Image 1 (cartoon, rainbow, N blue to C red):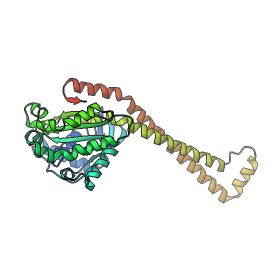
Image 2: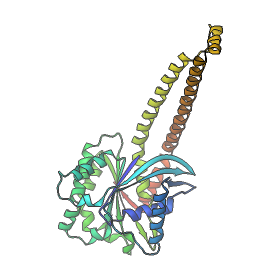
Image 3: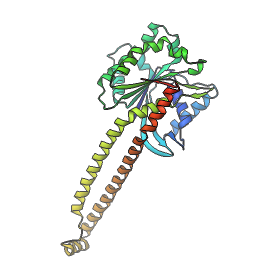
Image 4: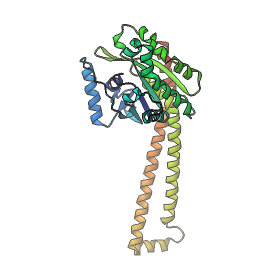
Length: 326
């Protein structure tokens, strides 16, 4: 499953990832995330610890990718790739540039999209500045939505960062910057392609708040198509394995019918015996492969069984005004 996050340099993407890993990384109970990349794990942990001391990461235009596993009750359920699209590409003015086309392609291939909006920018910038900063982003999202061909809603989360700078979130929700995105919000709300949400998050010295809803929203709406694709892939793999086993069975004698001839050949022909051993070993490996695929299918079924709980949690976030969903 691929989650794409987009935002300008210094919009808070890196801080968000650090806060997310601090709260949910290697979490043994409930839902958590895990990565085998020790260098990424150490980097996110260091950034989160620095933020708790009031030291924030510098802005970067370097793309990065995080390969996580969704971890539920200490069990690794599904892998998901979290791609941080480089902020510099969003500052270009040309819709025909290579970076603009790449951005559209990235959104089309993603299972979920998280858009980071700098809280300072959306409150303080003029209409002209907002247009310069966000026109390409809005255009790319709408272009990609028009090309989406999925059976379920494509989740798009709009995360307003730096909420800790305001005593309450009303300046953010009532800002000209958020109004600038209203045509896009209306297209999502009135269309049948995507589902949208807006939330304010905080990753600051004062604490980490509202960090989980974008991940949950992405998983809830993004996983049905992912599960469908994976089931189809796993079933095809199992069919391929079964065909290979059938072919091997024809090469491995069962010692019925012409049993004496088969035994004699096996005992008197070392090359024949060696080949039989290879066939049997290959069959065992393929049977083991089928068991592993079946285990992956069980994890998909378990993930699918959680959708009602995820929906209940999202509804609770809406009722408590933690998120706005449309």
